[in-house]
Image 1 (cartoon, rainbow, N blue to C red):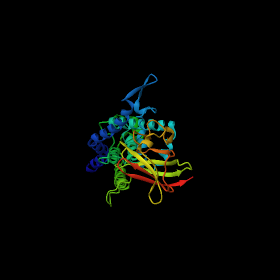
Image 2 (cartoon, helix red, strand yellow; image 1 turned 90 degrees about the vertical axis):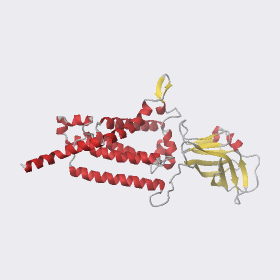
Image 3 (cartoon, one colour; image 1 turned 90 degrees about the horizontal axis):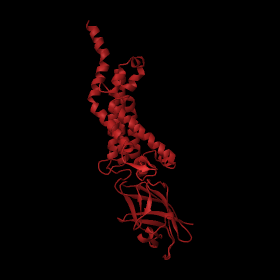
Image 4 (spheres, rainbow, N blue to C red; image 1 turned 60 degrees about the horizontal axis):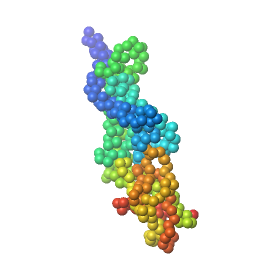
Length: 363
């Protein structure tokens, strides 16, 4: 009799254990789901404006300055390993729109699924993937508390726990799990929160814990160099930087160069109030002051991403500015007055005194 009871308790342990685990993580499941629901709903259900007589969500309108893909151009300088594919995607409007909609619908499905406990395990797995993608794209950003990094590592850990526990009694999965269909299809446990073998759960728990540790410590080290060394961000979110390249001086004195705002907060811009050519000794050969830079024609600044919502270089009342992620080819017109010497470098000066330089070639 004792042996029978032992067997019965052993056989029933997985279901009761998962039910308890899911109850413990009920709040975690809801919060993780609501985070994704919030991201999707802000685009789908709020901030409409009229377009050709139809109300359209502002953040999903490609022609709006608030189109959600503007975050991608801001994030490009610090993106991990997938900067090339993102830059390629940004060259094709249809692909950008499709990507935004796929991401939005994925967030909507994950959000609602986790909130109501439908296909909990499957959608928790998708949530893990979304948090990894968020880290690769936005993990470097956050001016106060490493905001995006914190969200991504927390989201991965939360989603991993929910994946292991499933939806439990307080979920739609529990209704599906009682059906004959679920009994006939053992694979449904992996989607609709049915009990899993204890040995499998133990193995998955260790693997997901290892993933969380490597993901957290590894990304922290790569992005902020702060695990075994003094903190030094891979890409600064606090100070703007402009990378200059392919600078050439034409025979008539016009200067053309490529500029890329490769660091800094996306909430502001790098402001350039002067540009000059200098010779080998550092003496000024030619100089464009703030007024001359502000008077540059539109054709003098060719932004790589011409969309209204993308990061741009543009003229200001004094000089010109570039948002984080802006990339452009800029041409400075010939000057009436120049000084002697052979140009060796182009130097841009920011409003705060910071300078950026690049070697020049003469055509």
